[in-house]
Image (cartoon, rainbow, N blue to C red):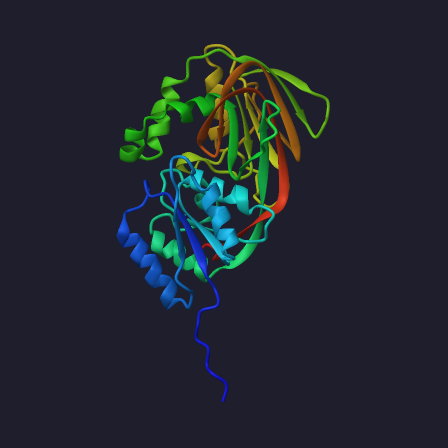
Amino acid sequence: MPENNTTPSRRAAVVINPAKSVGEALKGAIFRLCETQGWAEPLWLETTVEDPGVGQTREALEAGVDVVIAAGGDGTVRCVAEVLAGTGTPIGLVPLGTGNLLARNLGVDISDPVSACFDVLNGSEQAVDVVTAQLDGSQHEQVFLVMAGLGYDAAIMADTVDVLKDRMGWLAYVEAGIRKLPGKPVKATISVDGGHPIHRRVRSVMIGNCGRIMGGVEIFPEAKIDDGILDLLVLAPRGRFGWLGVVAGIFGSNKRETESVEYFRGGVAEIRLEVEQEFQLDGDHLGTGKRLTVRAEPDALKIRMTAPKD
């Protein structure tokens, strides 16, 4: 009789941000989960300040794992996705951060990391878009999955107090947003899909691949992560009461354009600013710049997950 080979054939890698982890208890729980679900012992790779996930994900690919689980916040997810995009190896999400924006948009369990890991191991693959971003003509393309921004929203990310994030969660961003309200608009030129450029005086330009941001607010009502289309939101409040138009356009029951809010859609967009502004990708503040080029890459990344429960 042939031998019964019971060696697990599938293996996951876990790229984890130790600063977000609850410690050894989580590691032990995930190892036990892999064993009970018929998976081999996972490859456990911790991120560092110097390498927040890129090198670890490359190591996981070289090891030939079947899925790379990003265990951390949106920054960890973005670093893992940047390496996995276009490779065919799927990403899995175990949310540990404050925002967890991609997980929230996809309906992933953000309350229990072990449950989220179970859903990865027992889920199926689906393809989603990623977006490449080039700041000031840099040869290095960076990837984001949820949202990028120049101006006011990026300044919020740069100035949010970490202690408040730990204590208050997404409300810490509200506090920073109030502090950053005063400011001057800058001249911007925006081109979508190579079309005729438009000129505005803006406080912020945001580019979405998903619809929801902090607090479950849906600011891109038409955005879908698998439609190959970018959604742009231009904030150009005018005068003392301009922000009321922003509130009405974004947070009103019926999303609509006002003289302070405009929406655009396309596969490629370029934003040029007269003055350098703060820049963020998926909530990570990445410096300042005057020119941003973004491009949708349809179905470039596979995510392993179970369908969200109704």
